[in-house]
Length: 328
Ligand code: NAX
Image 1 (spheres, rainbow, N blue to C red):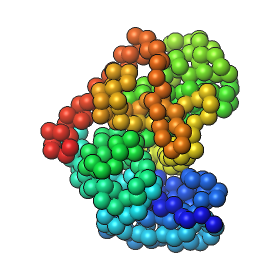
Image 2: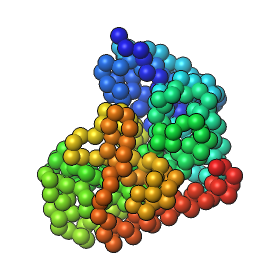
Image 3: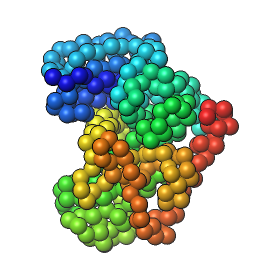
């Protein structure tokens, strides 16, 4: 049988962790013939809770689960990691300014970047889920100079999936009839879900729907503010859908996008579409043989341009703020 793949998950005792770990252990991250070894990272106060989750993972008797180790030390947790899912982060609490939030997360993602640099496997692939995800990914990446920058990604797949769901309801089609959905920019309320390049059964989604007012006043804000709507309804933030999107992100990265389709991933910009080089911004990407590529040559009209620019400007501001704080 195959040698196990080492998957490190941070924030393992949190609510996303609780949904995510069972799906990884059951084989949904890497496939039904790939055993996984889990390395869980938590803060010392939450190690006990992570141990409880590990007991439940044991009790699920997953044939593919080759072992679970729990750490409160990043250097140990990332040792040998082939896949690193950075879920744990410092949430914004009442009265916290954006600078405080970025600083608190810098204190998490800088040492984690260093630990990945020092000890992860040569083929490590990193997905940052913890918010502010794009900028946390940038901080970690900047402290891992020996790891190719392309290995650091942040999650906009949940936004992508939310956009598929909204469009499928509006158009009365299955999500599998929709191709080429794109989320541009930051995983935040400024993100831009793009229907002008999306296709339903091979035709432009925007034209098929033919309702610009819905697109502007309903679709875009519904997708961008879906996280808040979930909190309002559930009294707790999205967890199972976020875990599902993390599974999708890594699965697509490893296994490739289908011919004639693409996905959304926040990846380091090479300057494509006017996004400043080095920012970790969401793009339409194709994946193949474990590597991603930004889809080139799409025409961007004025409507899309303004929205992409607004979100990318926010990312540039976040980068400038963490630079000023000495975090990168
Ligand atoms: P929880 O608060 O339930 O869990 C977070 C866990 O991280 C806690 O157990 C905490 O002890 C742990 N943690 C904190 N600092 C840590 C550190 N330095 N090392 C290791 N573990 C640490 O949050 P949950 O609902 O699981 O959400 C996790 C993160 O995902 C949050 O930052 C959240 O904002 C973010 N999200 C990102 C999404 C995305 O699409 N990119 C969507 C869902 C989610 O809101």
